[in-house]
Length: 261
Image (cartoon, rainbow, N blue to C red; front, side, top):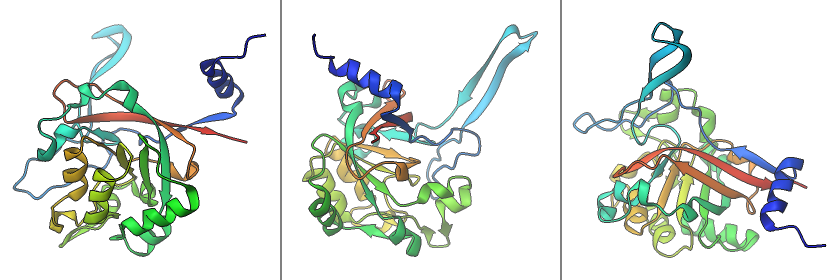
């Protein structure tokens, strides 16, 4: 009898529940938090729905909407062209589909971030994780769990800003450079509003995750949820951004496949 194909085995695992689908996406609505830049800069739009018809005179048998949203609103994908260092690289529609399905390493710094919202991950933190779990996945995602998804119900709590700016966890400048230029991953995923730490505007370079990752033809995923449901290794992430031609990024439905015992 022929052996079942890999795809048949995957389908069987999904059907039986041996492979769980974990939704890493924040629901998208008018209350979804958005990044806030200084007033002198252009601002991203929050998510808005405009009803076209709802089983009424405008359309008796159908309901549908127009929507308005920034490319970088809610759970979203950063393409290399998003930053000046990647201005000659791929837009979101040009990202190869094969790079949208990849293994993930999940590093848990939620306890440290709870004690210090400005907590920064250093290269030594990642090296220590690798000593316990093995190397970061070649062609995979580095996902940073900080517990920040618990704040996503509130713009104020999520951005966590005061007179000195936002206070959210992230990578140090040297760690961002290492992830972009020396690690084997294709990108960084975070639970915060952007891939950079809240005080990254004052780093050298400013916003190093964006600068180094985009310049290295790597990607970002932001405002992820439910990373606590993923194991440190073994999950496979499926990132599905809207393929906006010339787009710098797009809202995305992000899923993870997790094998359960």
